Image 1: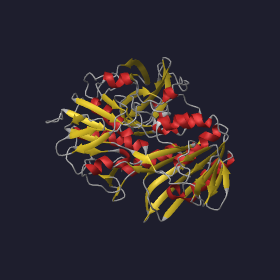
Image 2: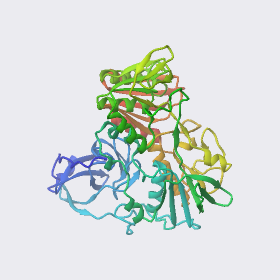
Image 3: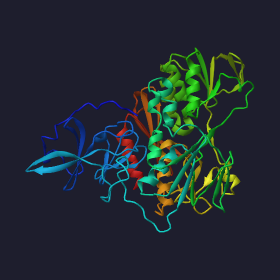
Image 4: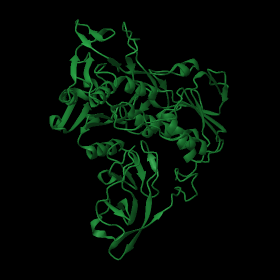
Length: 518
């Protein structure tokens, strides 16, 4: 997450701008008293909030205003223009806000306002300015979250934001506090982001909000009937409501030599640290798997000056998800940076200093990274007798087959209204938003999870943004030229657009999200 001081552009809103410059539904980026401010109008109402998304500092003026909210064009975070609250992930922190007044035909941004809850009440902290507390009868006394990744962390925060004051414990298999997992294969691995950027919150945050962390602890058994979670070290955690957010584990290739010390997978912060350490003493790397994670690792290793070869069975990288047009673009992006592809190939063995392919080719390698996908970690759910369906089957409110037990993130397969099927999506933003929805439902909201899936993938200086979900299609509509890095690709089935991927068209992608919601 960027901590750079924003460059002030646009008009001085403290001096005022003519109302005529701000039509109904319009937004204007400017500044007031040395801070970047976004001025927005909805009918006769005027709002002033911070101009940059609190996730990765995206320019909100280039986003979309929907009702009394604004959405970031980069990663689709959503904020309330009234309160500044971060309504939907990936942003977790609120925007600052200012009082706005009319002086004749001028609109003037006045003093900065304190963080306030949506219902006007004093928030639990300045970090959590809303929403109004949920005070459903029979609120649980004890909530346990299994998993300290995107879904688990977002759920814990949302429970406190909603005013939940009961016992709250988050169990995590790693020793780390929740962190920014997408960065592990991107800027952090490339050496462009310091490790201080990786944790989502410090330990003092969880202590301050009375969120008990049981880190470095693995759950061994879940007793759904008697409401009890048992950890591997023998500890037992009773609960009234529980969220399963156990994530996914990398698929491990049963290759001869795959247990050698220079063979790595990337899923955790510890994995990324180990990769960085190994990369510092490596000149040549082989990446097995032309997946999103494999290609992002390839880009990061090239940024470190390492020779990289990518091996994959497909004809084009990412073609199964993005289609042939964007698959060809992704390949060209990597080849321009010197990556060598071996497609239509698989590895048969890993040697001390090489990798052997099925056709007999031997590739020199000081470092081997395997990125061939992940599998949902459903062992705990399976042991508890929960209904499974290539993941944990959940209802539209993310509740499992056991009342009071919810699931979110990589393991959850939910009924998707747009496709008419049950789907499971392995993406960061989806996991966070499901965690937030599950938290509200734990408190009695009975809210349907209907957020449109979104993810992004970075390859050097080019980002592919993808909204929707299309496991299959019968037509692909391409607007623009992928080779010029300016295009929108729509994936259609029976004449209906299920998903869109864009390059260089962030706003169009965001507008598509709004359209799919309708």
